Amino acid sequence: MSLLYAGEEGWIVSHSKYLDEVYKRVKSEDGFCALGFNKMIFEINSQYLRQNQVAQSVQEPQDSIATHSSRKKRKRSQRLPQKELEEVDGVKRTFDAMMSAARDKGLFCRNNFLDNNELARLASMKFYQDTYAAKDESLYGSNDTDDAIVSEAHNKKYVFPRKCTFYCYDVRDIEKKMELCNQYDFIVLDPPWWNKSIRRKKTKCAEASYKMMYNEELAKIPIRKLLHSSGIVAVWCTNSSNHLNSIFNEIFPSWGITYRAKWYWLKVTQAGDTICNFNSTPGKQPYELLILGSALEKGKVDIPDGRLMISIPSAVHSHKPPLTEIIKEYLPGEPRCLEIFARYLLPGWTSWGLEILKFQHLSLYEILDECKKDGSDADDTRAENECKEQL
Image (cartoon, rainbow, N blue to C red; front, side, top):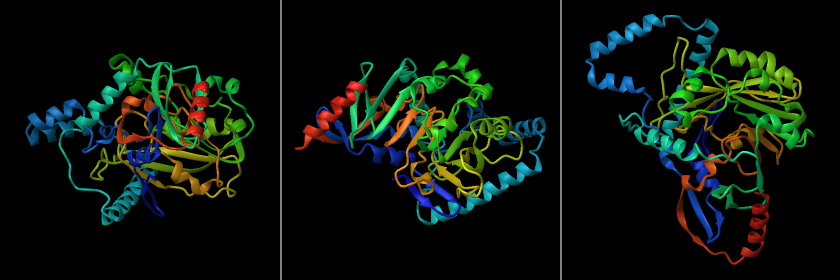
């Protein structure tokens, strides 16, 4: 569905194709149709530059740019510790090998447009503006049918994938709203890590900001009570050493989880280039981390270390690629999966978060195929009405 390439080193994933597959058959009032997610959100065609860098590259002569760059380098002359430098170099070498194999298969084109991802930026800004006022907290629902459906919640139209369940509540209420009976085989979390960048956004661009949590609060989430005895946990994390140390030394121990592996999400342009350069100094890297652990002791769950997940990222903050096809080989045949701090809904999954319906808003989708009536509507209509009652 979303895997473009799979090898011993990792996977290449298409988030856009995954969404198209999920919504290729959608039940609405007029029958069935195919929906496509806004492609401009994934129109990442060049490395990201700040606006002052764009202006500088256009207006300043090359030697002036080099001088400016040298000044910046002198300011940030501190290099990463040797162990981290070796890690970055290892990721880069694996990435280069995977991309060489991918290009041999014709997966990426070489066309780059020097517009600093203008279409994606505009699409993401419109998304923030359109969804900023949407408050869907204190809401529970599910779609128990075998088709994606269009339905209403709080007088707004959304599309819901098949067999999904969602809770739109604060994570601090999870013990009050969900059963804690070790029922999930896989739990993934994308925590709202506390960081200065988002704190600044709250004053400069409130639409793009979100509620953050301290690491001590994350450690209190009752993961071990939700996870099956042989289950797997995955936590999205930035390259912050503070957050990583907190996962290893505080959060996982508090949850009763044993660390197993670290995977890397490499973000690339349409041409297959990283969205920023690999850096030997403290600062931004072209990847985020996925830290995996298990409820069992080491050696009893076979999760390989150092895998890469490569994809064109969404222009919207924290819109992570789907893990469904990647993780399935490490789970039982029909796993029960839960995402906490979810940003969108997944078929067959339970999702928890304050913003889980934002990416489900019907305005983000276009009709690819006109709706067609189906002769066997009766059961689907009855199931859809049941879902509406829950919503």
